[in-house]
Amino acid sequence: MPVQSPIKPADSEGLRAKILATKPYQEGIILAEVKAHLDKSGNATYEQTIDDTREVALGGKCIVFLIRGSFEVGGCTISRNGLGHPVYDEKGLQLQQHTALVIIDTT
Image (tube, rainbow, N blue to C red):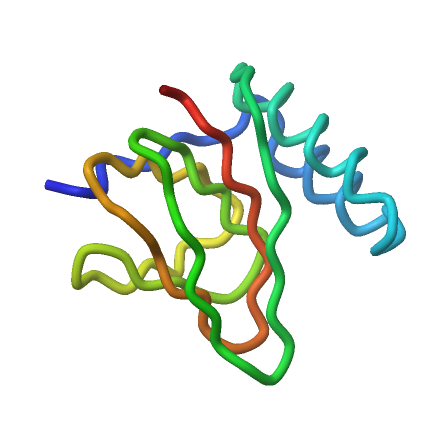
């Protein structure tokens, strides 16, 4: 199964408030907060779409923290915002319109 049970952040409301208070160009703050609240380390990227969809390559095992919107991976659509979704053995995912997420490499 490419997507496992979601991981809930240590303080969901606190993390959401910090993300909403962060300016779009301060994605480093978002990356650090998400990793800290999920108790994960590793390289991370912030990905976002507005009125388009986009493919994003994955490198093995990762956790996809969905800030808003939805994404497709392994034939499944994931739309549970505010959770970290462990993804294994997938080469990529597709961001749907109006989506923002953080991908944390856990390999």
